[in-house]
Image (cartoon, rainbow, N blue to C red; front, side):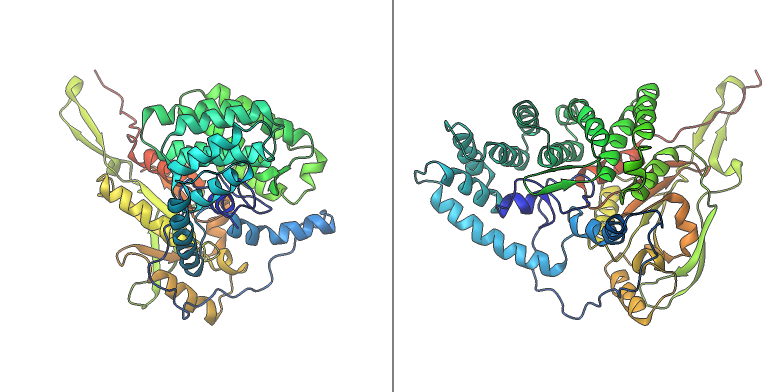
Length: 476
């Protein structure tokens, strides 16, 4: 299984992801598909990938080669149509017996099994009751798993502060492991997906709780394991950068800089530098450093995938090079009014390697329209052949797969396939991702999304935030 929700529900472990873990798992199980998946959807071809760096060991070179596959398999909401169809059947099978069994009396390990069953069936209230009774047992066999599942139940019930309390207890009562780390990621993601002030206040508290353990793990081997879960050094670094980014955006740049400086020093250890995670670590640091920097690319040029299937060459500028185009000026002297036009550009980067790409793009567009943010903002989707098959030489099978993907997107959404060198400066190694440029071509947001509800909401918040205005000098 690929996400915390599915693993918890299917009783393998309480949390999360396969080897080479991706960003924080989604707190919401994907909705099941209502109609059977089409057997006609073309699959992307799989040509040889570029070779691994030559200084890696054979084991690390293999892990490096497997990383795109593992990232795709472990990303939140990465389910294919067939997965969703099967998941929907499983949820229905779990919900009915949960409703029947919740009125009966059970003891010992049956309480844990029922908690898992009801979580899988999305019946969180009886799951909460079963799991509270389970961890209250004198000697439960899996107390850590019980608390992790209880946190998941609280997230399902929308009680983020109660989920936070369980994570605090886990850190206090048990050695910090991969399951606890992923559990904190889950609660943070659920909090970020909320608009409640109380829920958002959970984030800095859990950041403070998690950060020392991230540095400790990086200093002692660079990874975590536990309950069958694995967290690699790249995810540890991405989570530390998530904390730093939150501080930076909340006007605490010095605190953010201390975290990033410590990170750079820690990951300079030869054991990490020569490991399979190091390229992803470097990419994460590159994305972090690009905030508020000028874009290295002025425009995207490539092949437009149209809704009608008539592909054509197209050039899309990322910003307007005319400074006068960014302002409307009224009045004079002390009464001058300057209003910045919403001339920002939002680029949604996708890959067929991520089944979540289409759904994530749809969610973003829907939320922007709902909040009336879309008018005036340029939005387009972009990919490269290399982002889909590892090389920039397309095949007929890839064209068919891209055509099928394009049909899932809104007809009016400009969708481009560009040469991979145009995307490489942005260091995107997981999909989908988003890049937000202001009217002067500065990067206002650059991060991977991977179906994460909290990540999507955070990106939307940045889009909704006021555009900085550089006021002209006042002659008076």
